[in-house]
Amino acid sequence: MGKFPRVLRCLINDQVITDKQVWVPEIASKDLLSCVHTDEYLTNFIHGRVNEQDQKRTGFSWSEGLVSRCRYETGGTVLAAQVALQRGLACSTAGGTHHAFPGYGSGFCLINDLAVAAKYLMGNSSPKRKVLIVDLDVHQGDGTAFIFKEEPSVFTFSVHCGKNFPLRKQQSDLDVSVEDGLEDEEYLSIVEAHLPWLLETFRPDLVLYDAGVDPHQEDELGRLRLTDRGLYKRDLYVMKTMVSRGVPVAAVIGGGYSRDIDKLALRHSIVHRAATQVWREFGM
Image (cartoon, rainbow, N blue to C red; front, side, top):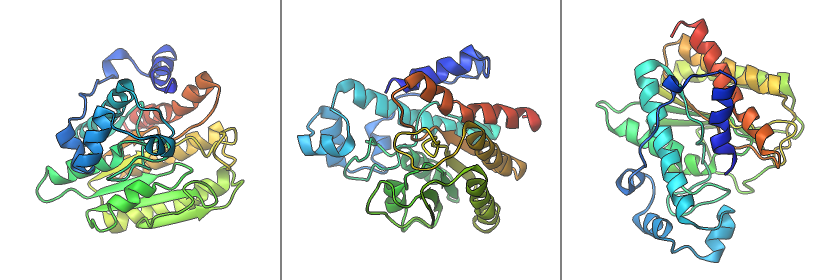
């Protein structure tokens, strides 16, 4: 939890962004969250009726602060998507909780912010917006894949380590399972082989990009071998590919695991640094 405020502080202190570029989200209402999650789950989660087994599955002990943080995080992803539709590109300093299912949380994820944002922005336009979810977290976005398995207006694309969590994978619209130890160039070539084709065939109105840093070689739960430079090149490529085609993209920070919280926050800021480069290059 300690990484979230540090990501923003790091961006301000390093002058990657200014205060004027920071928009603050509203807390996500129960009504908004119910477009993805069941009423029973939301009521129990919000009011603390969470048993020990459920807390063990998520990895978190329940608290009012945890509920507030998850709801603001989801509000942040929705806001980033709204701003992306207006401006072309926006990044959250949180988000990417892709293991949450409609009726339960899992793997450090309690509310599926990507699914909520996709459903909300898909449904509040006529005709329905088409949303592409590009999930490059090292773990498969199983909750997101399950939620949208029968929704033709949302396409889920996941590149993940096959031998990593979750043990039981769901079926995304496109899954690319990679082996342990994959390095920068091989990884980037996989992303490059699929992304342009997806944009040309699915033709999304909005892209939600989960820029997880857990493929990093120093990540404690990752099993891949990407470097800081590799993550930067990945993020730069993804966002340039979208922006150059006029497709709005909203990025979230996704997974990242380290006992050195300051180093982890700096690693999470790579996507914002890449976004700033794209913003400048395209004169946005």
